[in-house]
Image 1 (cartoon, rainbow, N blue to C red):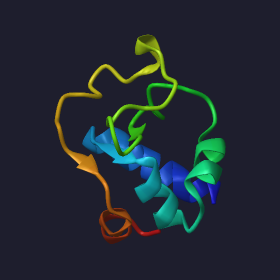
Image 2 (cartoon, helix red, strand yellow):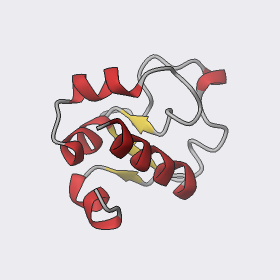
Image 3 (tube, rainbow, N blue to C red):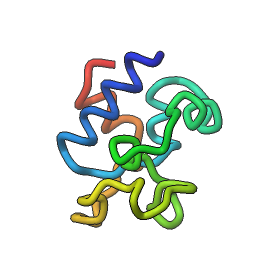
Image 4 (cartoon, rainbow, N blue to C red):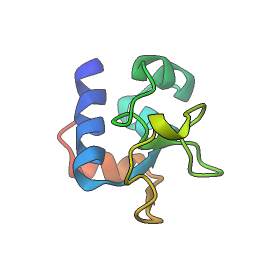
Length: 88
């Protein structure tokens, strides 16, 4: 499970695109709360995962967010996008 989460995280960092917790969790077949626990520390690399409403990472201070987090308004909201683009 952790390996697949890392694949998603690395993909988001490479594409510099945000993704909802819900989409990532669904792609992994787990609940969003489980996904947030799996994610671990609040780091810039993990800040690409955001809540659906505001599009922000939950509980992150500005210095914990990736500097390019808001470079685009695009947010992946569908697990199908992740499963289609990644081998997970």
